[in-house]
Image (cartoon, rainbow, N blue to C red; front, side, top):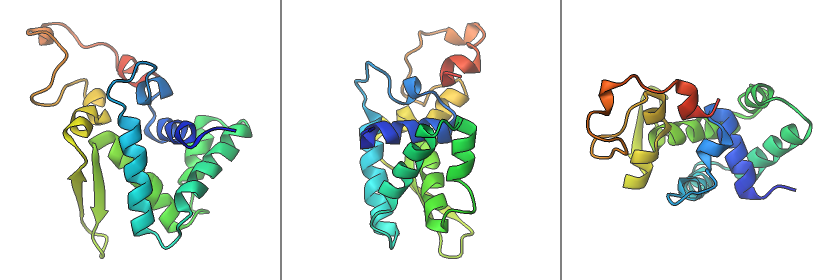
Length: 160
């Protein structure tokens, strides 16, 4: 039986398209996954009428994974219309958080979205930077002049 964190990391990897090694590296001094799990649990509990929604999402992921479904099949099942609107929206918000480092708030009319950055750590950890093969302003692990050479293939950033 997987732990909550293992299911959260697995689900996050499936929904974002990044490998689990990128989402939760073995050496992980930043540990953004813990910050994201707590935010996900807290916000979904506040937003949903169903106090068990997060555990239902993680259990469904675990059930699909244990049934031998592929990542694509799991992702499609998690975002399927067969789930409640709250379930699907929670999964979409999780994707948003991983890519942007912020938690989205959707207006009542559904026409606009605003977001709240979780932390400076989440800002620099957003997966969008890796997809762009770039770095956030004010934070770079690259040496001066790195732009002189072509970037590594996208698969080096995503793990796939």
